[in-house]
Length: 383
Image (cartoon, rainbow, N blue to C red; front, side, top):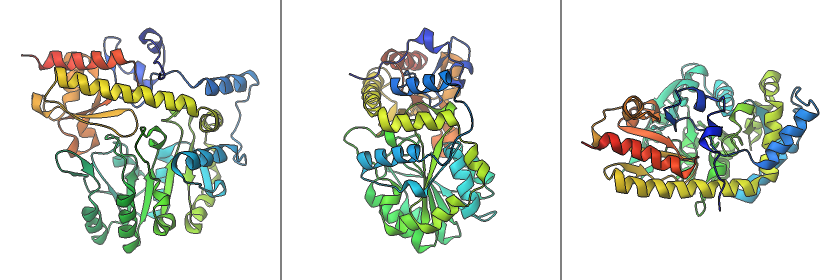
């Protein structure tokens, strides 16, 4: 089984960035947007809202969206966050900026772990803080947090960590032991953690996702999680996300946010988020099955047609991180592939210096597009 993607001719009628950024001869597999149709339960709820002209301002007093996420977290990860300690806002980026602007003084260092989601490099300065890079540890076969490096950076004056959990672009799911040790390190330096967990609902079968706020009392005291259904249910344009706190200190931060941070939340986004977490879990499971099948297909295609490419197999989400350094396409192979193969992938160096020679490919698509993407890369690789 699995969720089938929309056909290409229908996809090309969409007006989102993925389908309007490039001419029609370019195959777009860059921005993190799915090609699958909306979950029927979400589509029905949105149609019903339109039919009753229910397009006004969000009601932040409605507990149902927060309760729906809390129930999903309980059933999926054994975590029962208190809906009363949660806040709503526009998207995960706003959770990050609003939180950092309150936890970090101007000029304070905030640690990120490249290669990492490119906006992290901009969100920290937007909050008035300073980026401190502690790259992931890579041993040639796997990636992990450089906990010793984070310890040194905090000892040198950095104030906190902006954690990507699961990690984009690698689809890396940090282990409970790693996160528990991170919490001990951060507590020792009286720091904080903002954990971006937007890809968590897309964790693959057989892999255990650990919410940061579950790993220790210290993590609960000094951490805030950024949660959303936007990646899991393809709702990025509808604008809704959650601040999740566990301690009184962080709950006060959430309660003290300006009203406008809350009221900028999309009413339809919060509606769709509630329905997704409450009623569209079967759709999500089928969608993840389609994604995992595409991961396996990509592995096989690369082995057959681009044997020197190195794929970091994701354990969550629908993004594939591929090292193409062996093919001599320079630091930014995505730019070469766009120009010469009409294939749009995410540019590796945008994720940090560690992304040189890499591309990120979106696998939330029809299998035939995975094959076409590899064919376009392989054609360029042939002498």
